[in-house]
Image: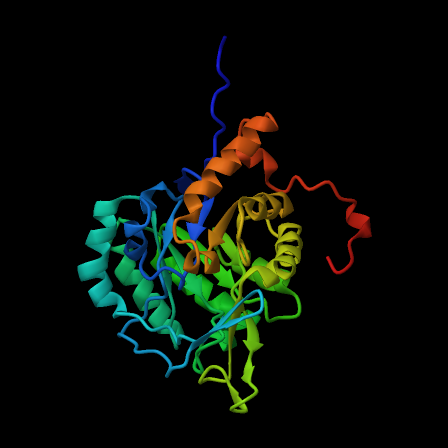
Length: 316
């Protein structure tokens, strides 16, 4: 009796051939190597680093993270070791571990994005860039870049010239029509868009009558945002031809399948890693079992396969 071949979990983002659609969400796992004590991170489709800046950043004052119903609010402020130390210390470590490395970069000025892209273009181990144009935790740059379509276009255009490999633009959900920003990124040469960063959120300590985080508001993530982001993935999927990486509220393997059916090619797993740092192993096993049971040979067949009458969908 011939056994059924294992389903193919491979997907393609730009010029990247990923072994599966699971990526880390920037900012939730440090530089990636920290997770390696819990599981072999080279089993992931790709490792997306936390945001890197030209100079080291201490980040925001504490408290800068708080748990809320169905998620958490964070206001880390892009704390990181800076591009020099990343190249010197972290990149060799990630190279030794193996796997696809995507560097997330952030900056206050357009020219700083270009400088970061130029520096990382010299290191072939960095297979892709993800532009953080949408972090709601930084007073300068951040959300202003991500909510201004013209500035977003300018940054993507200039970074595209500086970085020859896969370029991903991470979009903010805190705009009226996210599909407009996705099209702008596509028009300027982005290979993919990540939909989406965190939502602006707030929590209050009723006994102290103070916000629970120092910056008052921060980025809300966790399972509660999944339906919101799912709708945005679907909308963007009907507006652009480049791949979508979904990010938002993924806490079980079924969430991954839902996002892919809605139009995503890959997903970023984030907040769940705080509670189950090795959860991606079980995700991959369950996804493979699902595909086998449904007799689907390749996960790519599920991308955008949602059965829906578009005429019934408002706001597309």
